[in-house]
Length: 438
Image 1 (spheres, rainbow, N blue to C red):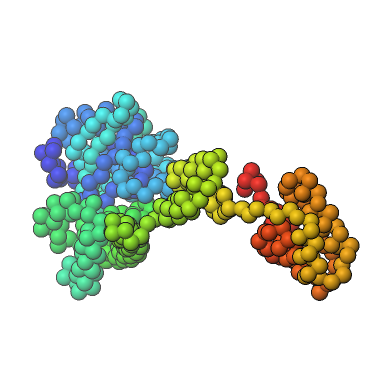
Image 2: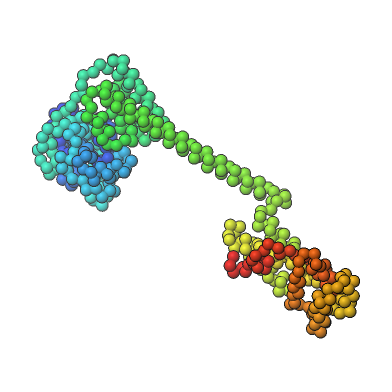
């Protein structure tokens, strides 16, 4: 009888009970609960009773209004078992003034050692409601109790039957989404007295709710079965609605994740298929191919050191991730390097007489301007090159600045290129930024 989950004693004659305080929630009749016992003397007394075959204790829930520290710790936990609070630093005293007056008579079905040899764990199943009426000893805490009975009621009353059926329906809905109590409910349902007992059904329904311990204590202290059913039904309805909202949120999140994953996989498959068919390349491959094509166009004409720099930057680009900041810097640098017409240049025609003929042919007057231009060409003829010199022509619109520039290009045998800098205020917009500051 010591291991059976049924009363091994009628319980009615048990008036002296060792107290087991509960921290998470009260223990209602018909419910199994693992409990942590820290007091060594209480644990020793339970073992002695277990050896004698009469292993019954009284479980009483802590009054949160009297113990604010315990209430604060318990309020932050959502676990449903008293043993789940074993890891907290809450020091549990057995001062009976801190416990509720009404508790449960519970049968001890199993006793096990705690971690590190400190305290132990007991598996309890409550059978009756009891009320403390006296104290026998404090070490361990032992009290005298009286057994409480439900107030008389008519089981065939239509209101009670309808409420009971609604509670059962809510329990079924909870078990569909949270099957943690399914095994216990199945075991208890095999006993016909439990299935048709509104009192026990109310207790079971209240235990399935993830509410604060004081709400369960109200159910424990309620001896009017109809009122107990009403309170349990209210808690169950709230729990069902909460589970519906939770299920809805979970479903929405899963659908969003699944849709994003589906799109991602499809896009990756599409890229792979296009790449295999040669229809499309990824951004990095496309950029590398573009720069390689531009390099091959002038590889034979460009200086060797320029080709080497471009190849090194191409290798660097292929190694970088597209999300890296350095990737855009390298891409811009390569774009600039491959846009310059390496190896393409024209022969300068440094002939002062020819230049004078061209200038006189294109423009009448402007003798001082023509003289300065001819001086520039004469110096370039003596040096053999015309590099590093800039001529600045200043004047209002329409006096011939642009046309004289065209004449200079024709006199030197160069291509004319007009580059407008109107509206630019920063020299970096023309010369570009140094790569160090990017």
